Image (tube, rainbow, N blue to C red; front, top):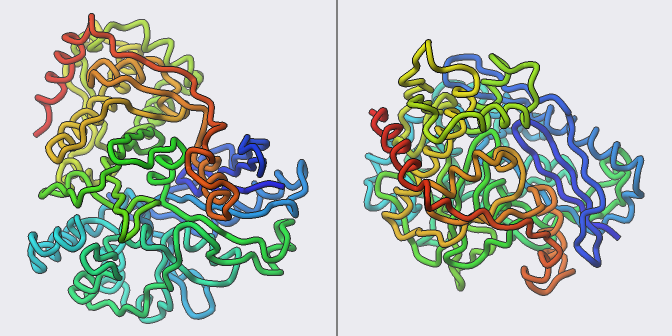
Amino acid sequence: MYFLGYDIGTSSVKLSLVDAESGQQVLSVTYPETEQKIDAPQANWAEQAPEMWWASLVQATRIAGEKVNLKEVKGIGITYQMHGLVIVDKNQKVLRPSIIWCDSRAVEIGNAAFEAIGAETCLAHHLNSPGNFTASKLKWVKENEPEVYAQIHKMMLPGDYIAMKLSGDITTTNTGLSEGILWDFKENNIASLVLDQYGISKDLIPDVVPTFGEQVKVNATMAAELGLAEGTPVCYRSGDQPNNALSLNVMKPGDIAATAGTSGVVYGVSDQLQFDPKSRVNTFAHVNHTEAERRLGVLLCINGTGILNSWLKGQIGKELSYPEMNDLAAQVSIGSEGLSILPFGNGAERVLQNSNPGASLHGINFNQHGRPHLMRAAQEGIVFSFYYGMEVMAEIGINPKVIRAGKANMFLSPIFRETLAGVSGVPIELYETDGSRGAALGAAYGMGQFATFDEAFAATENLGMIEPDMQNAAQYQDAYQRWKSFLK
């Protein structure tokens, strides 16, 4: 018997199967091999077709079905790119492309709502400004596409859409609603303050189901299409960053997780209602949050992370693999010989109070700097943006002793890992895991296969520790301070 995890990412859909007894991963599939398309109809917009995610999921599942009998899947977990808006009509037809996480069009809408509701009231109830999150994106549709808005039956997050496609039922979770600034932590209910401010009916919000436990069941049509057994339950659902924390067993106050894919995140768990008054970092319900036992995730997100590395590869390193780019970067000393790159070229950055300065390069010397310097400066710039946000997190009491990360994406790079440990002074524990495996194990826990999270993640392999290089700590700090001086 197996548990199946789907990771609905920006770049691809990833599937993992884990053995029901041991929790060991037995199969992994990623589809497509090339990155999924992001459309930008206007500057600072970012959209994807939900139908594209579903088509990728179908293909990934069919590939898996050629290798194992998917009728042996006991439960399904779903993780997904956070904050995206999906809207459907009464026939469950998608009404427009999803406005995804790195789209910046709703910034001013959220800022105006924050002021109108009142900062103190808004933060007390929602722990965040409405900002550029899902609720504000829905308000943008209401204001700018009234003919589309009039047809909406339900709004969803990307993972809710996948659960709908599997089952025909439209549901969401309180953890998901919290990431859209649609959950009121004081009232432990749907965020009427924000909805009333935006003139949005609660009827557009799906029924709320628990994060763990039976949510919906695969219907006969989808079972036949995917090779699953009819009635297979979806029993876990979460946004990608809380799920990344889950996959690393970051569940207790004081635990810290990090990831660096297209965007980058540092995520700390707290039992306190902590928030940044400027909403530079954001507090959401963690996957194990309950009214009785508070578990909140304080999230630092940097939009311009792996996408900068990918952009550099496309522009000046097409013939290189990512490991070869890392080798080039390693030819250059700490600080990239005075070259600094700010990675903020992927939409409004929350850590910069939703400003959108664009990426920039500083200190280039045409007689000194070449491709290796650019490769290293890009990785250092990404790390320094992480550390800048970690300084903000420290202001509200998030001070990591250890950072846990999966050995994937930017954490595959020794330069990246060593720079993060070196500038922060915090050791990094690496694990052999990813989001889809975490979703599968979340499903196993949700079905009661494991009694505790420690038991569920006992088989996750620890790949070792990267200790801070204290001998070069001053060099890392000098490079960071120079980088920071270019922030306006």
